[in-house]
Length: 361
Length: 270
Ligand SMILES: Nc1ncnc2c1ncn2[C@@H]1O[C@H](COP(=O)(O)OP(=O)(O)OP(=O)(O)O)[C@@H](O)[C@H]1O
Ligand SMILES: [Mg+2]
Picture (cartoon, helix red, strand yellow):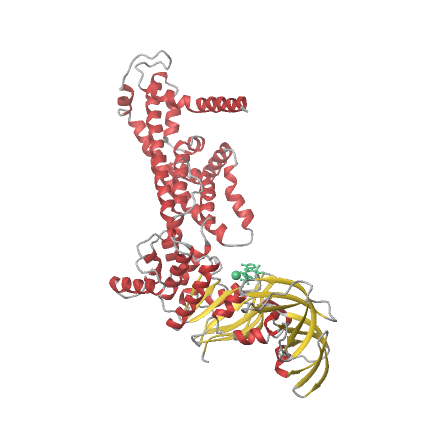
């Protein structure tokens, strides 16, 4: 992976407030990179330092091998799609999209063709003459995208571009954005606080908490092997049980898990690194399986009582309290043909696989 | 409930009569064929308007007032743009007190401003002229301009300017292409308000004007001669008609600007 952006030891203070606390990350050429984190963790701040709207308090940013210190936003090979879209309300759609071409040496006819092409790319062919303020939310978003992409930047920065759209439109734009990114081959850096969106769209995700990157990984690794409990809780649903490390022999770790007994874990199941003392193990709802009458388990089995039943149509989510513990475990089951939905209070067997556990110390 | 409603209506009507009756009397006596301002009316005439055309001193006063009002409105609007932009976009030490001092003339009695300006100007030996009146008027008009333009800047999304810079424009071209067109309604309001304030301002003009009186000062000087009263009425009629026309034009442009940019109407004059 050839890095196009290199961020080294970046700190940002707003007065006394330490908004970015030592960010180090390389972002690859043509990568779809997401910054994911809760509100106020510094995602926008980091994006704006890349765009050049905020000065760094410490550290360096290189884009395309060039040090960006002192380079103003209009001289950087980046363009930004703002959270509010920032569509110029007094201009037409075509004037908005062609705004960045004002200093371009091409002839007006060539520029008009470029605008038309950009509009076509985002699915707004023929909208050029419309007044920009009369557009719907989804159309604004597309205009903002076309306006930024027409300059063929090396990096496109997107600050929660989909958060203002309703669920259906958002899902449609997610796949469209991904398709567009593959088509133009430009590096996209997406800020979002929606973990699902980040998982769906990204090549890699940086999870941020309080101005620091807690984990930087591709979606699958992030979901399966979160390095801390905080990351695990932020990405999807995870069950936790108290655990303590019994013995470590080489690559294998023996862990005593409340309610489940002793399990042997591989070193990779402890992505956080620490492997001694007390902690917890986590596992995802879909790695647990309710055993219906006559089904034979793969892996190990625990017994418990159904306390919660939430029916979603395609799926049912159960809360099952295993014998010997008092925390309910969330279990998701697909509603296959002929499979019944358990009632609250029923006894059940739960199959689980030690390979699905993640250890946090 | 009903009696409450009629009470309120009566109050409104009385209020409007009180407000507009003098203005309605203006054209009535301007066309009245008598030098005495009193009922019953004596007949229709346009003599008073014709008489206006024959007084060179009046023409000079009108010209002076126009020059002063136009200069004042442009100067105070420019200053207002700078101050409003600084106060809404930047944080700097002492911002609160500085803006406070600029806004102070809004509440200072005009007579105080006029007298102290006169003392200072005489003290440093500047001769009184149209320029000194402009100076005084800019001083009292700028706070109005700032107040109007502040709200224009506040309703302007900061990311619009950032987007323009991000797309390759400089600060100055961003101002010209994005900021200026979008605060245009505010600028028109500011120009209009300062123009009107300056045009009919009396106290500062009276103190600071040299040998060239402004229109209000001229009118005041003519009130001593009862025979001139009807032509003053005619002059007033013209002024009222002019200001109403001006307001309508300005409001038309303001609304068109807002409709064009799809913004919310944040209240105008009409
Ligand atoms: N101009 C500023 N002055 C002072 N503090 C600021 C400024 N901008 C941001 N902050 C603070 O820095 C922290 C990070 O802000 P940032 O906007 O980067 O958060 P975010 O991760 O984008 O959150 P959100 O998801 O809510 O947009 C916040 O606590 C915020 O209050
Ligand atoms: Mg943000």
